[in-house]
Amino acid sequence: MTTGAPTPTYPARPRRSRLRTFLPLGVAAWLVLEIWLLTVVADAVGGLTVFLLLLAGLVLGSVVIKRAGRRAFQSLNEALQRGGTPTSGGGNGLMMLGGLLIMLPGLISDAAGLVLLIPPVQKALSRHAERTFERKLREATPGSLGDAFQQARMHRPDGKVVQGEVIRDEPGDTPQDPRPPLAR
Image 1 (cartoon, rainbow, N blue to C red):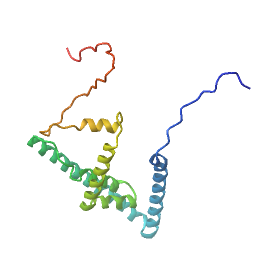
Image 2 (image 1 turned 30 degrees about the horizontal axis):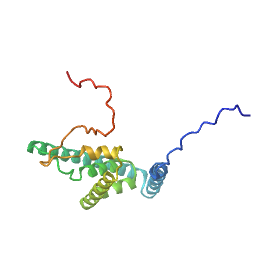
Image 3 (image 1 turned 45 degrees about the vertical axis):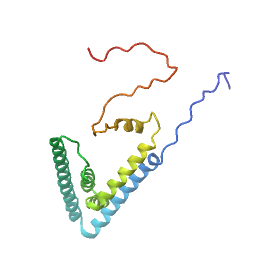
Image 4 (image 1 turned 60 degrees about the horizontal axis):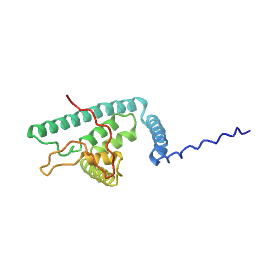
């Protein structure tokens, strides 16, 4: 039965990204694999040994995170004393991620965390992440979040960061109501 009212037309929903589609499935598969592997190892060597292995991973991961955090704080402190900005993280973020993965209960996450502690792997991953980030910034469309990052990274010739707001006066724009002053 129709009432004569037009059927509402809703805008088409944006397509979900692959990451949003497959990430929950990947996390679930990873958890099932971790639990299965822990039970297999516990059957082979005993439950107490697996418990001690998980406890050692917790302690080792916390030591790695503490050490990486201390390094990051020291490099930041040194850079600020020199009057500059810290150049690169030196892999501290990847060390912290490795420590976090070691702390998580499971053997696969422990192996991935230990791999992240290897310096050549850290350098390769950081270079790849930096290139990907730079490429995404170059591809950013005006008005997007990436464009905001691009504008926030503008530097003066002497290397100092200039913070401010860009206001573009387009021809044909009509003046609007005057804005109140920002500070009094």
